Length: 66
Image (cartoon, rainbow, N blue to C red; front, side, top):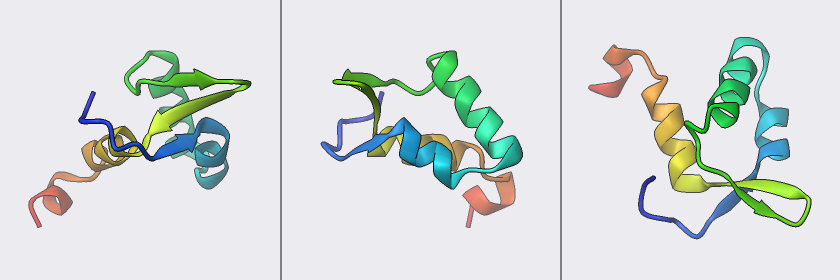
């Protein structure tokens, strides 16, 4: 896990922003614990820094070097 950013995002909000294949990849990452989550009440939270790192890891190689 990256250094905690203290900025948290709910899984529900993130799922609402994703479509199709990206949504499926996100759901798999959460299910297989590739993205660490924290339970807070009835919500699952993801640290914003972990979310950004996961998104960056999914970018095509030519985008990552730019």
